[in-house]
Image (cartoon, rainbow, N blue to C red; front, side):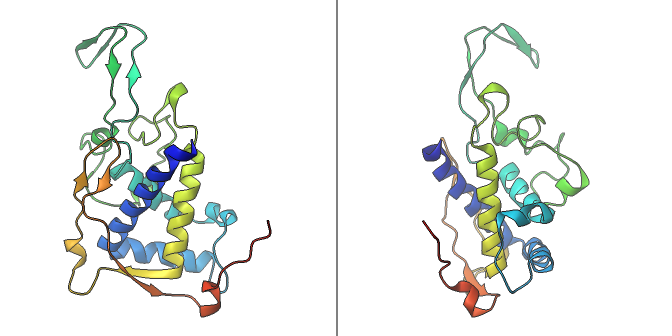
Length: 213
């Protein structure tokens, strides 16, 4: 579970940050929420998550547009079924294209737009109960680390956005951020994200945090 969660979490955060650099409006809105809830005299903790609904929506929207495993893991049909007019024999290996489902214009309004507000307007379950959004799969074979992954992605995005403002490198406009994918079992960015970080908080909050082992 830990091994499977390392690359996928990193991929999800990089995609999310690419979208945030490309969409300064969304980045600013998330930072305004962080400033309102946390302020500038401390750093975010996991206890703050419940008070940061927009940040959670940013994580969900990144997982919708850029699921790290676009075809999920292979499944085997345990019975003869008919789906969409097609007969699926028992024993068939089935690949579910969650990437395509999450970009279906019949299901999502403006599906290619990075707009976290859609999750404030409508309650969409991300843990396998709403088949419009299945970044972790569903049923008995749902990813066992789904909640851990959500917490990690939310935490990493929260810290990155609270501590820094992110902008494209000099000479590059937000519209020029490359969102092309490198296809495979997991979906990396074709061109690794490069961005400039500008500190937003007092200098003492950037010191190493002591941890008692």
